[in-house]
Image (cartoon, rainbow, N blue to C red; front, side, top):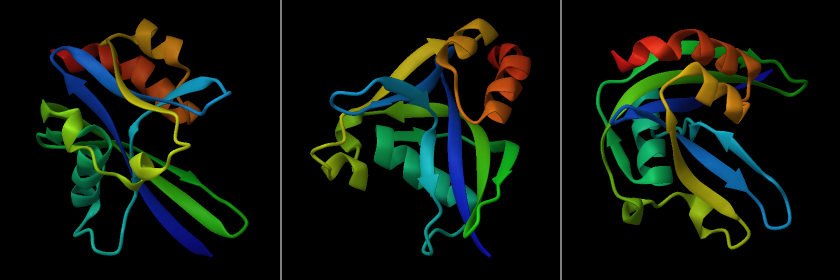
Length: 144
């Protein structure tokens, strides 16, 4: 069985959470965390996380803390998602460089800020459900 590791960032910036709004032409939008697959040349999970955050939203982040790991078994590939919390130090969308941005059919791929509270998280209907549940329970304490 092959195992693929993904890193995902729940970002806090100036008292708000930062997620991505994704969508394709002719389809609806949904919200997700910044992140993606760990590549062979990434030194570790945190290095992969920092690369993904820069690629997708042009941001640098402070220390990252893993708060949730979700394993999704599949027939051919098991995906292990590592969720980290980090504060945004700076963000400039002109620095984005991910391969997703080169796809003319990518559609909406933009950062969205939401309030740092459980009701705002609930409205996003984040996936996987384990992330949604964890954020609803703990996000209120992250603003302290």
